[in-house]
Image (cartoon, rainbow, N blue to C red; front, side, top):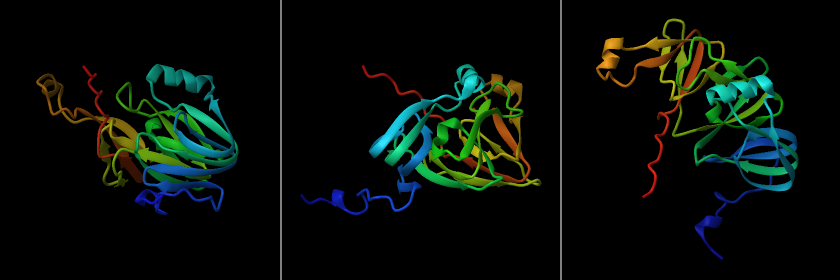
Length: 225
């Protein structure tokens, strides 16, 4: 049987090293030898002797998820084999974290990560009860973190002289040493009259970077008649 489908670009090869690699722009391959973690429902294929188990976040973490709808439902993948992960054909990226690095990521943008990384849900200081970020996922430690993003992400440097303001629905994550607060870009009177639709942003100050996606949350699809 002949087809461009069977070109080397599309064929899955045996892993040459353990851990996480990009299979292509839309999926991540993980050669498991022990344990790794992934968002529930993101495994699209696997081979070998692997087990998939729901992973709890502790009472505090589960309570925060229940209250806010934010956070990340995880599964532990254990054993020896290869697994592929993806989510709604979003673009995939791998971040290599070193000891001392701390990265704040919106739970909806996390695909998978090494078990050597520490993960917890933390309050976004100054964010109040708004939009996409009362609680975010904070990663620290040493290892690789697989992220997903609708479209191609934009990484914007933040400096003490130039804070950055981001839409809470578009923000993917930021370096955790930045300070956060809410910024209102229009008056209450303007909001009552309809305003610009961009009333409140997350303000990031300090030294670091912020990652945003080139889209806001997708609207609900209309039901078919």
